[in-house]
Every structure is written in C-alpha cells, then in structure tokens.
Image (cartoon, rainbow, N blue to C red):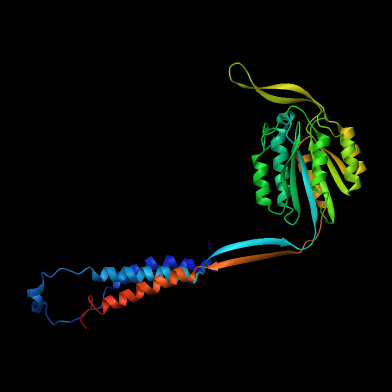
Length: 332
C-alpha cells in the first residue's frame, strides 16, 4: 500500500495536541447556578462515561478522515523501455581459485569473488536502462539470470552466489563465453556486450575459448575480458588442525594471451584487475565506453482505498450524532 499524499499523515501528530488543549479548556456548562447550595442534594451523582466514549468516536473518525485524505492505494507498476539500449551479459567465474584473498577493501583482506561481486553491483546500479544477464561458470557454465530490466532481481541473484554453488574444480572459459553469447543471439539492440571475468585458464568444457570468440564476432557481440587477481601465487585461506584460519600460498595462472585474443577478435578490450582501485577503474571505463540513450516510460495501476477509510469514518461520526441525540442526549 502506498499514499498519493503522504504528507497529510503529519496531521495525525496534531491530534494529541488538539485533544490535550480541549481537555484543558473543559466542557461548556449546561447550567449556571448562583450558588452550589442549590445542588447539595445531587452531589452524590456519578459522572457518566458517555462523554469519553463520544469523544473517542470523534477522534477515531478524524484519524480515518486524515488517512483517507492522504489517498491510500494499492499500486501495481511496471517500467517499459521503448528504445533498444545496450544488452549486457556478465560471465562470472565461480571456480575454486576465486577464494584467493589478494584484494583489500577498506584495509580488510577479501577474496576475488567478493571483490568482483561488489564492483559488478555498482556497475549494474549505474545502468538502469540496460538489460543485463548473468552467467556463472566453473567446471560448467550456467545461466544464473537471463537478460532483464529487473535489476533488483538480478542483484538478489548476484548476492546469492557463493563458492561451491556449482562444481568449482576447473574453469570452462569457452563454455562460459558460448553460453553468454547464446543469450544475446536473438536479441535486437544497439549494442550487445559480454563482460568475461576469470582468474584462470580454460581447462574444462567442450568449446574452445577462441571458437566461442568467433561466434561472438559473427553475431556482432563485443567482449570485454577481465583477468582477476595477481599472477604467480596468491594467499588462499584454509583451516589448520587446531581450527585456526591460516593462509597458504598457492600457484595461480591467468591465460592473458587467450583473453587478449578474445577481446581483439570481437573489438572489445582486455583489462587486468590486480587491485581494488584497478577493478573499479575498469568497470568505470566500460561504463563510459558503452553508453546509450533510452526512452523510459513508467506505467502504474492504482486501486484506490479511499472508501475503506472514509466510509467507517462517516459511520462513526453518524453513530456519535445519533447517540448524542438519543440515549446520550444532554440537557440544553
């Protein structure tokens, strides 16, 4: 439920103040006597609670009227992009080597997966008008999210990605690129982009990376490749016999030559992300290179709930009037 004029709800804050001021002033007298001695015989009459109940009905009716004034409604909305923009598929490496912690964020060591995910999330948030999809790969490649403008759904899926979600012993770069290109095969847009992030070499899958690159070239898909992490050795966290977290230096290798050739054949560009600042700069550069104008139209369907509040408010007000003129009738 939303409100068309939510600022009217601020009037609810005035009701306790109004009730307090009214209580201080008191009720106007029904009779004025020159001397209380005239009422000495009726002093033991108890005060009726009808006035408090009547006031409660009136204040509750006012609350309902104020809520009705703010125009509550149930809203169903959708966003449509009438112009074709940039379609982007991100191929995200989930192999075991992504556990290497050779990045730092605000002085804390983080693994490659965390670093890549945080930078990608900020990139997605900057491109609200583009359809973006997500392919994850390790020993095999899978479509995690098809091309979509629902970036909230995309970010939720991205947050769920963890090492071990898919078999992570090997790296199928060719299969990942082929899967990403396949998601763009039948779309018609101004620009079709694949961002391929990996920290290893192709050692799994049935499709060679350069074969997938040729398919991308034939379909007019531009591929930006990113080599993630340091070359040589990287610290990988493990647990020793005493349950303590320790780091072991393990050899890592990025097939930069193949990634460069993929980018060259598809008119893309190869980047090397070996620290957090460089990772941020890479996505900022891709964001500037691939820009488009999109005509975004928003449609909203509202189910007005005005009557659900104004009707009981009027009923309470009418009930108070009837009671005050019948069983709770006051002396003039």
